[in-house]
View (cartoon, rainbow, N blue to C red):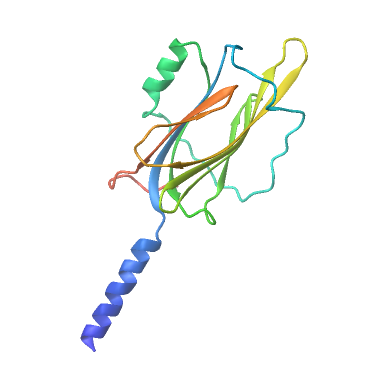
Length: 178
């Protein structure tokens, strides 16, 4: 009887550890291209609406660190940084992972979802707004999914903008997300 109880307790503990969401530090850098050499108008949109999706609360870190050197390098090369975000989150499987609202004034709006299965997955559904040389504003959609590995820098490309993203497991000493 004691052996059965001990086995059952061990099984339950291992299941609870496996069912917990993993805690990660996520950092994303959104940047805009300033040259018009490689730009095309095929990705232009007349209107964009966000679909109703379950939303998570994004609590930004005060001081993004992983991608600071990349942001500095991009600025030096003439790119414009639109938004630099970092946050800690419990990453869940795709069905349970929330979408996060991303906004940078009137320049960039959209959604980001980070999930995990065997690999990490990042999904972006964004709209970039740019002035169109006397023709008002144009909108460009950036919709992308990417399978990722932790601790690796990933680059997502669009004719009008780019995204650098890095996801790292949170240190064991780190506090849980709020």
